[in-house]
Length: 68
Image (cartoon, rainbow, N blue to C red; front, side, top):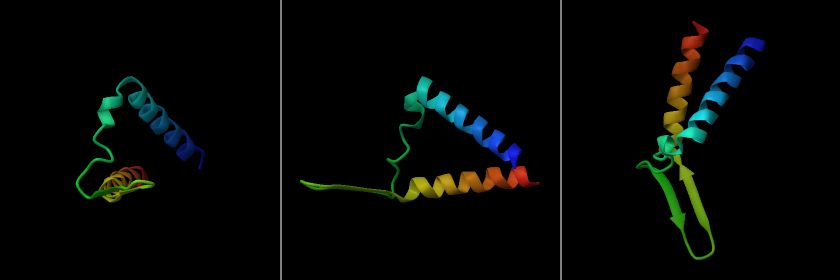
């Protein structure tokens, strides 16, 4: 269990460093075809369907690699 926390911490540190030093690297995230963005006068609705599917696939691959 502690090993998973260390791995998760390292991943979060790397992701944080990427977002800090190269914010344009993930500029595409949330703007993919299939991400729903509805704006009206008084409200805004954002549903990142495609982006979350990609995150799910990447996490599934990474976790399967660590489990083997």
